[in-house]
Length: 468
Image (tube, rainbow, N blue to C red; front, top):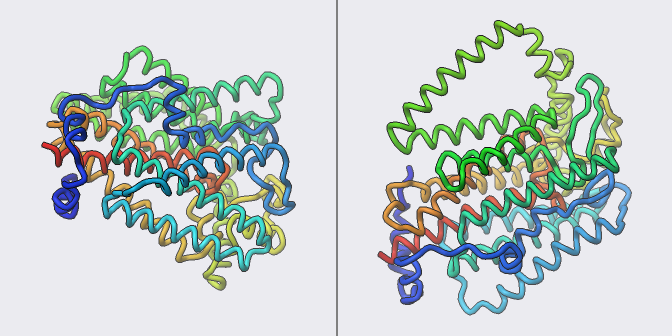
């Protein structure tokens, strides 16, 4: 399961003429060095998209029903356009583009999905908005392709990429806290029965940036990739921020990611395995003691945020939204139209007894249901296949037995494994949030950056194994 595919082994020989002596020297002598903060973003501007950028208004993106375009929308689109223009120019100037076949198949799926989004604008209730978002989707993936092509021949220090994502998330969390002092209405959300929740609004999605900080820090702590006090500080910061959101979806996704991370770490050695089993048994005993002392009822009320049984069963009304989308797409298999279709149709044809007005519901509150609503069943199938291929490709190149002999590959392996855990978090949290598939959202770019790191580092490891 974790070995190099036979197809990659065959391509090792096919691409051998493209690897010069300088490539061999770089791999056999030393890994890529870290570069300064500013030079990193100058070298890889795609990481600037992870900032979002912060938007100091109640909602992010272009309003899908009113067509509102203001300064913040121009800022969002402008940043993406500059990064994508640079990527297009570099791709056009490249003499040769060498990408492994498996990665090419993933990129083809991503671009075919974009074609379905463009086609959906033909039957969308707001064609202009759907077409505009389709273009933004393509601009994002053009930037991803250029990054993969670039690092395939000239790799970065892969763990620096991971650390930069953590730094970006930490800086965004700082912006949220700063905004809390002067404009709390932009980052706080008050829900009856759930209290005050620090969600971040359009400034930054705290439900994702804080778990990202925690996951990266937990990985670096377990694998001794940075000083432990620093890792503990960032881990606790991310964990506290996640708990402040009071988002069950984010908390569950983070817990699941920790389980995956701990399981992977336990497989690295007998001592790690014993510590994992001991920690698991201790957590069970401690959990039982806490339930016995505090009481199961009080703990349950804390977890469910004071909601009644109906609210919990419907995932705060999400299941009713999902049911509507599925029923609609059973008779309209092509979907509703990219981004704009769902909000318009949902408002016109359906109303729910939710705790918020139906006009405020702009997404399907699930990345998978959102793709279904945007462009139908075929789009959902392509999206699921693409994600599955990314995970399989990453797992195939994260095996320690195939990379321990190559010093640079140890860095690549750690980056791939950490990015896989981060992607798992996005996929699990995506069950409850649509923003992972919506352009102009910072977490949309974050998820695509996780994918780019997995594909780029894995492909580079193939070349490294060839040079021995």
